[in-house]
Image (cartoon, rainbow over all chains, first blue to last red; front, side, top):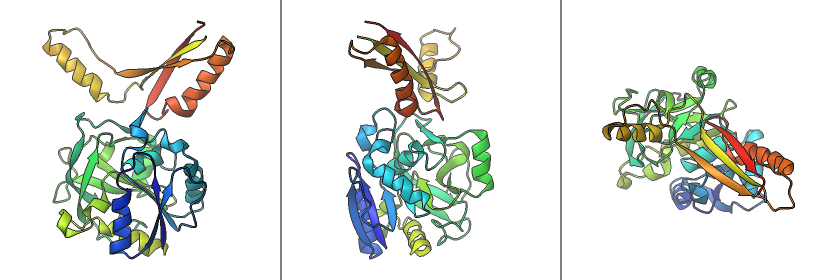
Length: 229
Length: 83
């Protein structure tokens, strides 16, 4: 597959994503500058983590007006895969490809540590290589990961199996204690109704080799590649 | 020079952890009669004098809807001063 990794001013996980896809999965990867008006024939788009535009105004609020976002919205609407990680997830929310919004972490702290995630739906395009109820160990690093959505849409997300990952403890229990940011229903990652756009706060690219403390994140990229290639 | 002062704040019912933290500090300072603290932000837009108050009002409304406010979690109001 040909991956496009979008680079905004302030992106800082773009090289990590590039390295994982290239070195571990032997995929073709290109960086795409946010001012581009084309996705250069990409088969999949990744919006990486970081602090696009310094998180000014609201996280992702300014990035959504970058010229390349118009192309990405069209690309997503045509059913092709878009993965947003951390700040990439926040941008997907701001531009309306995924429902809801991010609030500041309940603790008012920037949280940067490994967490456990319960795979809530192991049949999606982004989690199909996971086992049912598998628990993944993947790090988070964010200040605004407190996912909020109203009751009606939350019900839809739950009912349609669009919640792919929830914060949990190492045994898979989704307790308040295991929720690092106050996110509704412990949501760590959601997919759109069509199943081709996925946003998640944890960083699977930072957990793609044992040397880094975990390689559980690989399963997300593996699932995407298997589903869309 | 019309000037718009836009106040953006979290919608009622949405948890405001910053406001809660300030409220608990106030309590520890013996300001016990405050029910709730909400934190927002103020954004000022300055228009050139060639733009009328009516035009600046319309533009401010549009700007709020397009970028300054995320309607999922935020509300806003603004006032325009003519100079």
